[in-house]
Length: 66
Figure (cartoon, rainbow, N blue to C red):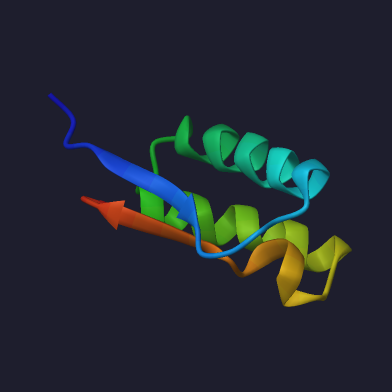
């Protein structure tokens, strides 16, 4: 059984960019990398398109992020 974790936002986020980040996160997660790496890669993908931290920075993994 895979240990559970939660991907959460620390503050209000833009819905359109949150959906893009989540899609990218799950796409990365399906490649077999850790949850932390999947989130980092998703954030980098969004960062390339939107430099403002508002769009990519508020996300945090809570729980087992390996």
